[in-house]
Image 1 (cartoon, chains in turn blue, red):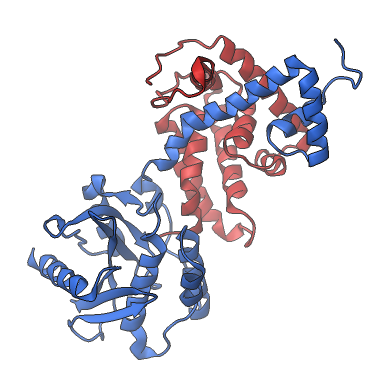
Image 2: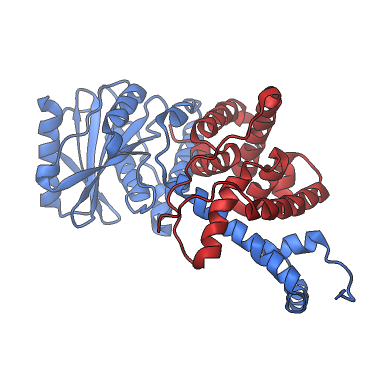
Length: 262
Length: 164
């Protein structure tokens, strides 16, 4: 049976299969499909191809990214402070699958003044926590299963021995970690832990200026997220999580001891 | 350090895996693409989508490699694409297995356009940009690729066992 409308235009057939026809064209094509079983079976075959491709290859999306691919990224160039902040905000926002509008808004604020270094360190820790902790699909770049690769890679990029403190006796399982923009000279590392209830706690690490005051626990809170932070040998550490302050401080003490201890 | 390009890595790997048929070649291709992309990052137009730009770099590298290897090109056996979930009956399950095996038997040009559109869901215009061919060529290659894959899937070798 030949269709009085002539043969099907292959481009229209493709656009139908790919859902790229306008509503009128789509309806016209659907009418034609009902009258032409061979055409309908061709469309079904192409839809099955798409489903098959996704079934076969979508699992690749969930694989941890090899460290070498991340290591290929060059250090970001030195830029003016304002441009730097804009870039950092864009980066964090781009990574923040679940970052709320409110989070994004306060990302744009920044501490001014030379004394703001530690405060801005703490804010950065909180921003990074807010950006990645809610991410269900890809909270870390390298998963804890590859812990050795993770700490080796982070140590190399930070230029300092980075350890992931063992916290399972405190009910915290290591999820993994990622590298983050710190400041211009110093990248930062974020290690992520998870409680059995699924709450996430992150440890943020980067070098801070040598004139930073010596160790004492400080606390900063933004948008309902608390961070306890301290400085040890010119390195800043911040433990951030949506836990009670007492619980978080307790954990921060443990982390502090264990980082120092070995 | 995280870079806007980093967010694209999972999709680049998916595309490369389907394109090359094995994980090692795919990751080599992605790695080379990333190195070139980072080096050329300053030429990228701000505000433009990174994805078509990255896929275009990958396409160029893929074509270069295909030229190098043409003399000893063999059809590589497709790696185990993982367990295939059976849903929608035997026909659908068979189609999934067959389509993966048959992909390796498509010409590289057909495989590329099909994967860009059907797997990566690029617009036709973006696919044309990635492949550096006119839109009409994308449409005709796409139609040919789908028809050919359908033929191949019908008699693709090695109908492997399905793990339910």
